[in-house]
Image (cartoon, each protein chain N blue to C red):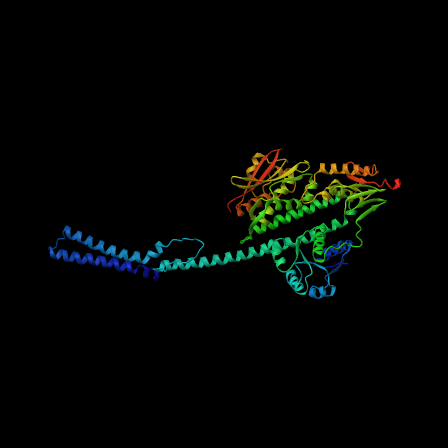
Length: 334
Length: 233
């Protein structure tokens, strides 16, 4: 109430002052013309009142100008508001600042929690790698006493666990607020070869064989670790969806108009036309996911996210029963 | 006798590594007290250290710096952390190499061997005889020559790898997968046909030096080398 009156006091005074002026003019006008108020007097009243009205509003405009003209240029920047001219806006500003502080604290808390969670997740994944190593080494050690079929089965399951951990690790890394990209010059052929080595036993077990067709001097700019993960996902899919075909997975690199293209081609079951647009969606497994086990629908989704973050294009072409080609396109001018 | 000091907080990995390295004639000591790693290092005086990063109390980087202050002994990190940053840290803290978990024993061995060679020069174990000899059939592992009753035949690298695998597992069935893994190296990705071709060639070369019918194909299982030449003596 008091604040309202404080705010409106100017308007009240102005209102009565105008009435007063009208009264004075009417009094003067009537006394001059003997009780009659002429049209010219009315005109004069209007003129005077309009003049004061303008003066009053100009004054008010300058008082409030900052508030009206204040526009948020960068939403994330600051919660600053200009000094307020009256009680109402002061109230609003206080309220707004309280809210802002509250949200900011909430956000910081969440940030902190997320950091903790990410940290825990990554620690945990790394810890899980130790028992995985122990199992792998134990199997290697006991190989002479194991039935070959059993060793193969165990190897396969361990590969799955490893692959799953890898997915979880990169998913968690990708969610981090500050991502650790180190873009450097990479010899594409070296990276591809090292990944093929990594998948050596997987290739052999699934009876598909890699073929590399690329210029060994071809270099691109990317992050070795993240790009490596992308190529791993594609390779793992290529093996999975063309297993026991006794065919090749072809790794080819070429220079096209829009950059250097790394194409990884398998001759497997291919992807149904209606699924093609959705292979990069999270958790999408499509028809093949129901045919081949262990599809998570996460590998290509993450690969796509990473390529977006690194500014590479990721494209897919496929014919059912003919095979699939996934291509990573690197910009030349970097 | 070269001594290797293993600093790893997982006892099973320690044991497996120690067993494995024993087989290759390395003397192995493992960490006893994680607070006195530098002291143990001094006492054991190893020629090479395998060091984990995640250790109780102080991390591997800390100990690596400590050991570097004592000696130039080669140090290899073994860790589950695979980020480029950790590898950079490792090298900056004085490590010579870095292996990520889960690792293969062959990789560890290869890295150890190459570091030992670089630091201590060519070193051939007295026990490591370059000639494999099974009832007079001899395979020279350095020149890839197969000899039987003074007849020689030269093998290619792939044929040699096959012959070596078969001879070390005589009378045992070896799966195609196992043999493919043996043949496959980082320059050359071997497929099924190449394996078949090379098996045929090994057969032929065995025949050239007078051994027939030793290399048997076991349908849907793999191949086996049967010692038929003992009776030919």
